[in-house]
Image (cartoon, rainbow, N blue to C red; front, top):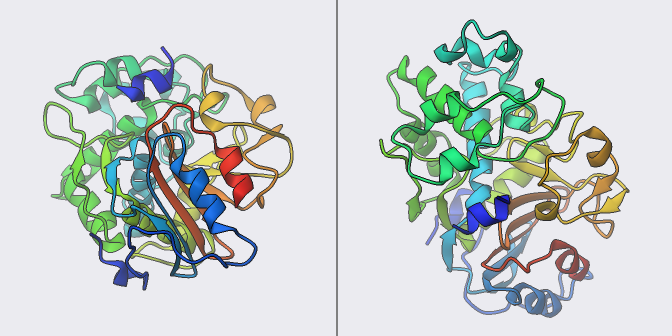
Length: 340
C-alpha cells in the first residue's frame, strides 16, 4: 500500500519577534512576488489556510489561525529534539543504535546502524507503516525494534515510520536513565522554546507520542517552526538549539542528498520531481542524485513536507517562510513554487 494511502487514514510570536497573523490577504509588494497570485494558488486543492513572512514581517495570510494534522512535518520536530539532545551531550549521530536497543545485541546485520542512518532514513529497515499505523500498537517502540532489516545500512533511502519510531524509542530509553520521559523532553526542548502548543498528537497504546507523524498545529505555528529552521539553517542559533547541532542532525546522506533530519533540500539542477510521487518504491543514489524539487527556486530552499498539501517552504538567506495547510492528494509543489 502506498504511503499516501496510509497517511490519508494562538501562538507566542514574540519568541522570535514575529507578528501575529490575521485571516485576510496581506499587501502585495514583497520584492517580485505577487502575493495575490500566491494566495489564489494556496487556496486551491483543499487549502485550509496559509501565510507568508519575510524577515519576521507578515507579507500575506489567509485563515492563518486554521489548524490540523501536520502529518510528516512532525519529523522536523523530532529532528529538532535530536539536535537539542546533541547539544546536551547525551546523543551522538555516530553512535550505534544497538548499544541502546537491547533486542539488537548479537544481530550482526544491525550492528552498523547508526543514529544518522535513522535521521537519513537509510538504516535498511522495512518502512514499517503496516505494523505501526494499521492498528494502535500497545508499544510502538517495541514494534519498531522488531521491524525487519531488508538491506545493508546506507544503501537505499526508504521512506516510512520505522526509522523515526525507532529513534523515538532510542531517545526514550536513554532519557529514562536520566529521569526524564520523551514527551516531557519534547515539550522542554522543542515545543516551549519554539512556541508551539499542539492541539493534539497521535499516541500509541501506552500514551507515547509518535515521532513520524501525528502532531496538530496551526498555520501560524508552522510559520514559527519554519522561522526557527531557517535561522538554524542560516548558521544562527535559535530556540535553545545550536546551529552546528542542527547541521549535524539534518545532514543528508550520499544516497539521498535531499533529505536529513525531517528536512527536505531543493538541491541543484536535475529533473524536477514531486516528493510524494517518488517515495514509493524506495530508490537509491542514482535516482536521487539526478533530481531536484524546483528549478525555479534556489538550491538552498528547504521544505517540511506533510502529505496532501501540508508544507513549510523556507528560504534561509532571505528569511522568507511560507506555511500552508491543506487536505487534497491533488496538491503539487511545482506550480505553487513557480508562483513564488
